Image (cartoon, rainbow, N blue to C red; front, side, top):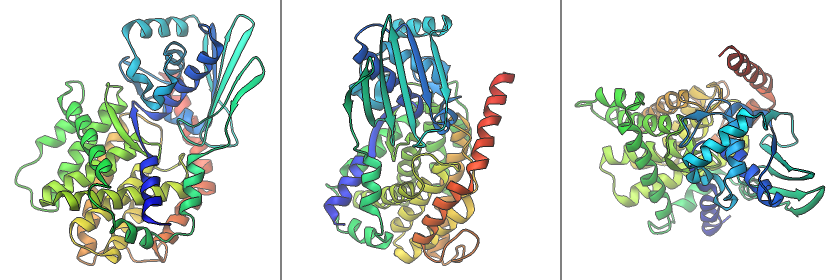
Amino acid sequence: MNKQTLLGILTSEMQRSTGCTDPGAVALAVSRASRELGAAPERIEVTVSPGVYKNGASVGIPGTGERGLVLAAALGALIDHPEAGLAIFDFVTAELLAGAKDLVTQGRVTVGYAEATDPLSVRARVEAGPSHAHALITGDYANIVEVGRDGRVVYSSTLSSTAEVRDALADTPLESLFALVATMTTDELRFLEQAAELNREAARFGLAAPSLKLGRVLEKSAGGLPQPFAAMHQAQVWTAAASEARMAGLPVTVMAIAGSGNHGITFTLGLLAAAETLGSSREQLARALAYGAVVTVVIKSHVRRMTAFCGCAVAASTGVAAGTVSLLGGDFAAAERAMQTVIGTLAGMLCDGAKESCAYKLSTSVSLAIQAAFAAVEGASIPPSMGIVGATIDRSFSNLARLNNPGMVGTDQLVLRLIEEGARRT
């Protein structure tokens, strides 16, 4: 591992996303299959892995006022822009939305889930007359690994960016990665600053939206707060507003990390709030964002894209804790203490799919992360080898992987059943 390799990993893990990545992946797969079909699809059938179904069941679709994977699939059949990747919903128009709703009403779209070899899997099949085409996404939300028409594979790829990242980071201690971050220049980290600014625009959009409440309610409670409470509060306001806007399906674009827009919101806006409250320099902010990004990516390389617990709480917020320690002038030992506290406190927070309640989880988690950083600099933290907290932070990351799978597999299956029961009742 060297500095340039690590910068390449961080750059590759950042991706622009409009709307939630799960319905985005469904629309992308259908769009690519439809292009291969070369005709307007008459029937669309999508099968996703359970985790994708869980995350996409209730989340809003940008520019539609509607929710769920069925409409996302229908839109994908009409949006001929697979090259847009996870920003495919940028191309939603009133005309396309009306056409997608017609497909759904006519019963031409079906979406189901089934166990797959990869926990992140989307298979789309489209038909027109006797012809059919398919596209398969696995490993990551925009990672199309196979495209075919009429039973013949026309494109296949064994490349997996997530697997490459896992291999590159394997057996590299976090402290060694932090040492590399310390050698990076502000210009080299400019892309992280730009990501933070893009995500702040999403927060501003959310705060200005009359239909959304959480960010504005939190904002009203400010006034003369001392540190660390001012930083904790500002981080709550911004993460709540940006996530609520995104989960409700408002047309906001964010910079995602490790396959998740909410992860991107959490780590960038949490650290941006801390830096501005503390009066940190641009260089300090850039480096803090790099520490936060490294931690988020490393944890996600252990637990994979799909988790039974809230990845924003366990991965992105742990990154916020480490980055905030750097803003406070703390060393790696203090950052390790802060990260251990976040993991030991928040690892049990369930993921029950993408929706507005994510905003509550994000804002709560990011506040705890900043608090943990301030406490760790003063020597207060959850001790090593207590509960799921490992003797080192690297051991805690391994423990998280085991907690996620196989530890919480049964819990995740029950959560999925509860989501389905709730959908039937409503």
